[in-house]
Length: 517
Image 1 (cartoon, rainbow, N blue to C red):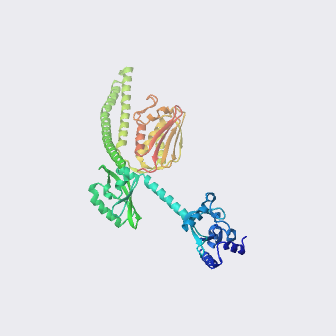
Image 2 (image 1 turned 135 degrees about the vertical axis):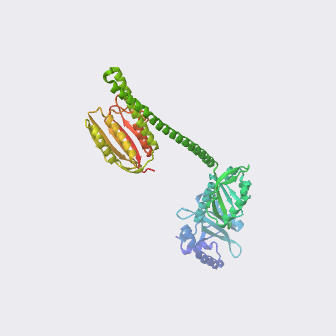
Image 3 (image 1 turned 90 degrees about the vertical axis):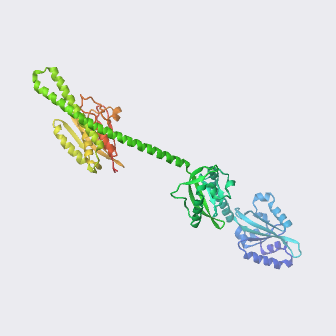
């Protein structure tokens, strides 16, 4: 521990008796300056005076540091390289030295210091020592480094931005451009900086642009340029480039500049033109398809009606022959008449189904809330009269209320339930289940039976017109019923599908959206 006598002895190395009043003045001044370390060194560089600011900055108390060499405050690598002695030598030759560098606190942590080292002379002009002034700039350095890093990052972002960036001053002069601006417009940046922004604008827009520029600087704010207008830039070769431009004001050199982000939308424009072309072609195809469908439906309707008259004649004359000839015809002749009559009646059924199928494509939908459960109960009740000689077990679960055309949805359920009844004819006890599954965006309804089923490999054919998987001798039908089901469900925005296997029954599904447009 250094006492007052030791301190006076250390100070006597640099002070003659006539200097003590000056030293007392130095001490008084040093104690008043608390933001700086004011340190007095003797000619050897040993510390002989230490103020409160030095204690605060380095955390050394005066009695811990007095008499020790000031190199104690230097990092070890600087001591090894002789930096402390070099600083004193430069001060001896120059009279003073200003520098910045790392210094050590008592706990070994580093601080970044602004340092002034001045020569101290006695009244006779002899070298008496040095005055070391140290200021802690650690926070300032960290802030400056952060700002420098931020500037570097911003500069990197500016240069590597995917869009062209052009900075323009209030007079319309280009001040800065990035790499993408060179790519889009074909100029080197040295050719653009200092030129007017009109260099990058087609000549026919110059007058309008100058007025827009004046208007913008009258009310500078972040906004898109030319809202509702098609904007074009000018390439160095004179070609025009469709662009989108975003404007942002920035403060620079006591004036407002504009930071313009320019995007080349050539590919976007080409894509829009292609989409427009495809939409037009699609619209034409849809119109042609609609016309073809109308012609087909009209043809189907007309043919069906035109076929009814000759079929009625055939059936009528077959009945007349049977009534007139009676038993006079041989067995083979009567068989021929039966075949003719049966074929004509089957043709009549087919015509009826074709007319129904055609009507489903032309008729207007009358949308409303439809209780599917009520429809199923009504259909089952109507069918009971035809099922008196059969044992049928019904398993009908609660069904939803949906938005759709009641008559059309009734036809869907009649066809599906009718199929279930027909294809369970060979079962001693027919089991038919009807229910639904609620999904997030739709209702799925099923009709399941334990009938003869079908080969699931052909499931995709079931809903096609005239497609049948069973011979007419096994099960009657025209192959139109499921096609009608699909047409109705598709018109409601739903879908149809089937599941099953040979002799394991079948399950037919259809879905309806929760909201029908």
